[in-house]
Structure formats: C-alpha cells, structure tokens
Length: 156
Image (cartoon, rainbow, N blue to C red; front, side):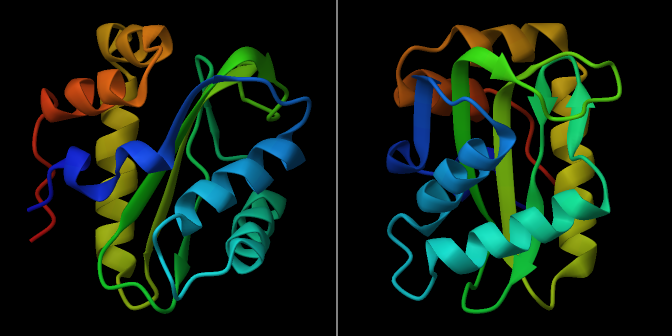
C-alpha cells in the first residue's frame, strides 16, 4: 500500500512554471524525477518518457498529463509534479492545453504496480476538487498536503 505523498518530495515538485512545449515539459519533469536519485540520469528518464509519448499522448484531458515509464535502478515508484502558469499542447483527447503534469517512474519489474498507480492517479484527477487544489497550489508543500489528504493506493 502506498500513499501518493510518500512517492514524491518537495524537491520533486515545481509550481506555476513557464514552458513553451511538451518537449521542454518532459525535460523539466525528467530533471525533477532524477532529483535525489543518484543512480538515475535525467537524459535516460527523458528518453523513457519521450518514447512513451511517441506511443500515444499521456494527456488525460481537463489539463492533466501523466507521463510515465519503467526504469532500472529504483526500488519503489517515484512521482514528480509540475504545474504550469500557461498550459502546453500535449495532444490531449479534449484538445485542452495541459497545465498539471504528474510523472511516474516505477521499477522495471513492477508492471502491475505501474498500472495500479496510473489507474489510481487517473481516478484522483477525475475529481474536480482535487484538480483545482493542485492547480491552485503556489508552493510544493501545498501539493504535498493535497496528496496527503488523498486516499491511499492499494498496490498489494
């Protein structure tokens, strides 16, 4: 069982940022995912996220994207979060620009957990109140508190 807030840190969250493209967002979120992870390279993470995007956009609609992938050299899932001042085109199904990006990396051998975490995050983002709290956060701690109030994710 994971609590979403345990999968990220304040250092892995940036609020109200400015980026001009999906590529720049993926580069930035790759840096955040590598933060504090000595065995991870931002370039390798970027490559994994970009390859996943080439299979199809990870945008959910309603301004949300969940770039994700599996990677070696981590023991548990990690999440990095970006919120944007102005949304960027992520080829979303509703054609809305994306301004909330939750990126997820899981250990390479954890396919089932990967799918469970993605489903749980997607479910949270179906709640307009949750989206608005994340969107309105001006500091990483605000996002951590919102995550702490979210339900636990059962990955057993």
